[in-house]
Length: 559
Image 1 (cartoon, one colour):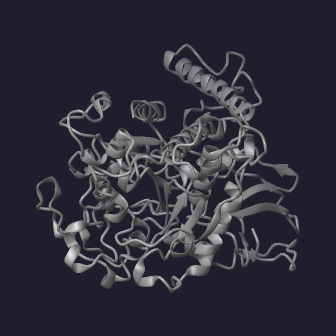
Image 2 (cartoon, one colour):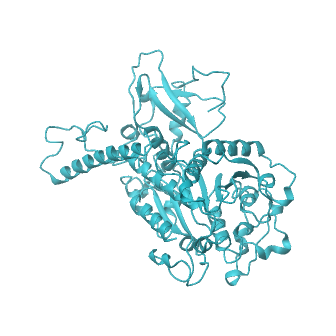
Image 3 (cartoon, one colour):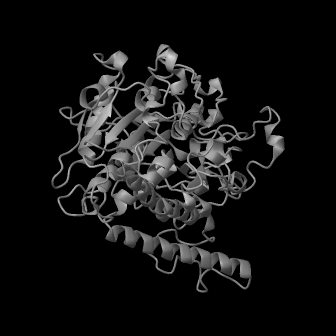
């Protein structure tokens, strides 16, 4: 729709360090579904050409923290995500080719692996809650990440205080830290402006029900994951407000549990091909696909071959689906989501996306090579040949609402979106924002340190737009957050939490003298963190491991 396109374009332009907008036509060379009468609003997209509808993809990732991430650097991503620009912010770290004589030309190897999350709305075009939820969620994430990144430490003039409680942006001398050189005055002004912007956006988010802990959590999700959002996967169906794409159901269009004689009945739609290409080019452990027509979270199996069978990891899926249900919760007139297998709670289908994404790589006997005749035929059969890792996702179905296009007053409001209350701010969109955020959270466990002794940290230990490799020759010592503690103490109190998990067997703290660490914790040649030297130091006798002192064994194992 023109409204969704406008919102997506605004997000990409307002938050360029965290968002990339493209289409599967640009990225993968796919055709457009529809005719000249469909999606006239796509003319507002710069590279739109030809008849039919674009299939838009919004990628959420911290480009500055991970400049050599595969999507940032992808030559197929058109328009590109400015990968060279973000690499240049590392202060020349990747420009010295002499460092890479022994790396076989792969000078951009090795920065932190980012887990992928897949979020799809409107595989059926007349089911409307999913697209709105994903666009609203994306805006909330991007606004929080941008706010949390301010003021950006690499712009801090020498001698300036970092905190936000100094309304003038820090100290640095009676003249505000500037001398007669215009360059320094410009740096000081930029820093002060970013401090003011940080204060303003934090207040704005808090006024809308996003206090500091929630803002930090949302920013962490952007900075430590790569989330691929395809809000209207069935773009033509969404534009026409029809379930199908030109009469073909995209959720019967995947090559799983399709009879071999019907191999011409998969990959017929652009929606199916778009999702196929996204899975082929990423490794999604977690995914969600939003639908409508009932209210349930459903997982594998949903195929006739496995009608009376449990999936191999049914317990894990049940645990996750139950958590989705509880965190999304209900609102007046609507209970928390029911949950269970698709075979039990919904119905089975051949060619369903959920089972395909879950088992296509490890159950090859259920996979066929598609030979569709749509869009002129000539579909490459290798596009539906998968290796043993591509399709292993917990890609769950979320049936959002009994009514496929529920009334506006049941959607909720933008205030208090993370609180499951009984007021009119809660609703279909609000609870599915929460559900999608939880999917992003659980894709990978993490530890967050909240305080040392009596000092409670104002910021999270993950700062968006913070590239820890190097800025202007600075090392981890200059760029890390540090708390100095007396060396002669026998005990230290450190407070941390574990996220991204439901069951926690144990946690430990590795501690030792800071001076024992190498000056650069990353590898001097390819930037791999931590380097082999760092790992050897951490394993030495200078470092020790401590377990938490306040574990309640009666509640052990719960996050």
